[in-house]
Length: 414
Image (cartoon, rainbow, N blue to C red; front, top):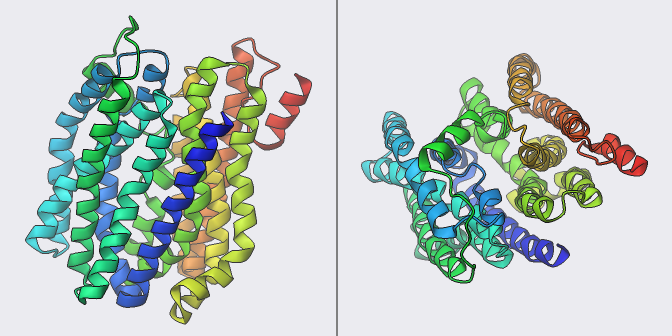
């Protein structure tokens, strides 16, 4: 367990460094406006890829970890995504065209929406095979290559909004190709099994049904960024994502821990302490990073971004809560109650929408960060309560599935 986590944490560190480098270069060379324009275009592609990936990645990690055929499961997941991708990729290209992007950026956005969706599925398959080093490599490769190409653009003095987007698309293509090779290599090392492979239609139905319950709309649908650019401007979004970039570390920590949890629970369903640590780690990480955020903003992005120093601190704590929520989602999924939090997530999202509309008009970006923090804490707390109830309802009253003090209290009772 700990060896796997160490490998994945190395991947997190490298990924975060790559994200910092790319964000730093864009912010310093293109300023808040250019940073906001790129963030807006990336937002469209990211949302499209999330919807596509969710239709194919449902329980792939868990199925493979329980012995399902690797290549067959991976193939069915890809087939599950195809019908959705045709619609969503076209919609993404139309939105980019409406936003005034060049034709190459528009077409590339549509294609890369599918490529970026393939990578999470490949990571899930690799994690299910317990190939954690390969999982970490695949997680790091796209942002790492992206940062490297940005450095080349800087040297060649061709650093523009369009060339930055081309570099991002290239990272998606290379990542998907390498992911395919890693999955194929992992499958050759796994013994054949008689475990039933889920059909493409079954994977797609399960994924779309859990679109809200297994993912927080606040993060997965980027509601905060959508509202900032809608209520403000591209420049406002440029400032906001600069502060948000520091919150990526606890969020990525939660993502990696959530990848490990299903395999851990499938081999040892009573692994209470491991689940407790996995849930608490992202939030504690966010709390530790928050005091350093104001200093880091000035150091990394320059004085023109000083207005978002406090915003960055609040977003780091919110990022920690989101990371904890990722782990709790996997706990609920393992207990077979992946739809239990759907109504809660919708309710929290509605509350966030109301809060951000009110607070943004008064406090601007500070109000948006405050609203995100409140909503993220609420979502994680309610997710913990549902997870704890799920364990108790299965006759495991001594096992902990909640968050924070509820998790620790349940573990102590056991």
